[in-house]
Image 1 (tube, one colour):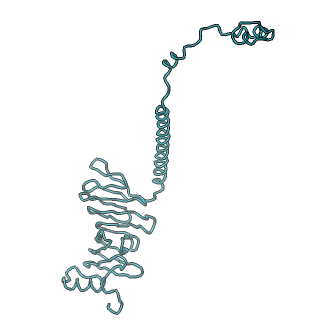
Image 2 (spheres, helix red, strand yellow):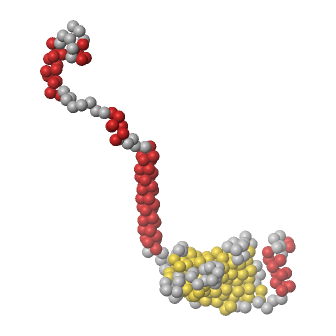
Image 3 (cartoon, one colour):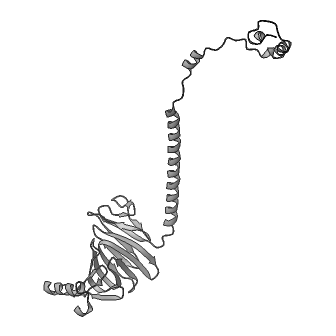
Length: 265
């Protein structure tokens, strides 16, 4: 048998091949052969950049969804924690735009609240006051940063990180406390001013009553009309009256903060 019939239909037909043709004939392709050159022109090949753009868009969408989820969780936790702040102090704007956390107090915003763990910040042109009916009132000068640490029964505690406050306290002695970087001011029923500079050094001036100033067991008690300085890692010095001479103040400062050997003091 010749193989020509199998390839081009010429020559002597093979019975087996004819049998297969009869069975498979209905599946015969009777259309013209496709023009592959024309197909190549009408179908554009996808460039790698297209798939990259889609992949990048997908990644950006995933990142945006993650950020949205994180922001939602943050706001939820913030609202939840704000309900558990406990007793808060009323905050009133006196000048400028002081802020509590990220909330600015402007002319039209009305009073705010200072809760436990929150910080009141005044810039160079802002002043504010905080008040708690059963405790007292504190005015906060420009350039200050004040945090409320505790506000439970029998103990209200603030932290003055920098700046100046003027406190008028009518709570029982020992219940109002102000931390600062170099000492702790304990109210003994008084009116006083406390200033802390950027180095952490402080100065307390008592106008009425008494204030206790202490650090690591070292204590000073400042009566009305007296001033007391304090230094980081050293604590409060010796109180002196406001009308003390400059030479006396300088000598006292050297004694308190420059003579660190007990024999020299």
